[in-house]
Image (cartoon, rainbow, N blue to C red; front, side, top):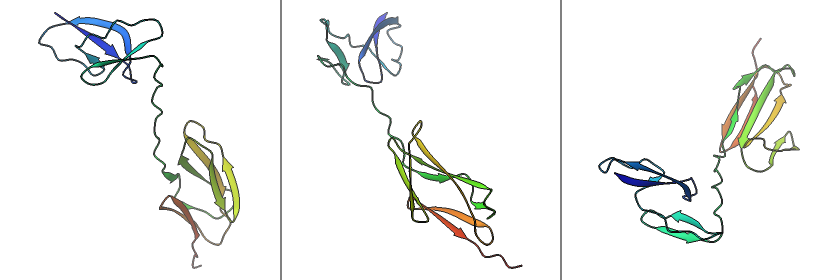
Length: 142
């Protein structure tokens, strides 16, 4: 039997260990290398081939959100009642400009969402190009 040791997403030793068969693989987030003895206020961080002792608790990684501008509809009737939701992945306030007017939208859960309506002749097409939302009124032949 071999003892394996668990580390978290910061690669910090969790204090958890367990016995496994000597020829068994090691699961992700575990290592066969024993962590060092720690004093009060110390953390063991696994660096791939060795443990490092640190005196400042490592922070959890901040997820990096892709900054992708999206819309939920690609064509909307221009009747001023049909909404289009525009979202942008961000960890900060997102600023949308619609017809020259600036809208600052606080992100919630990593997404900033702006709802807009269309008031133009014919249906309105929505496109995303180079992280910019392009809204175009399309003329309809009657």
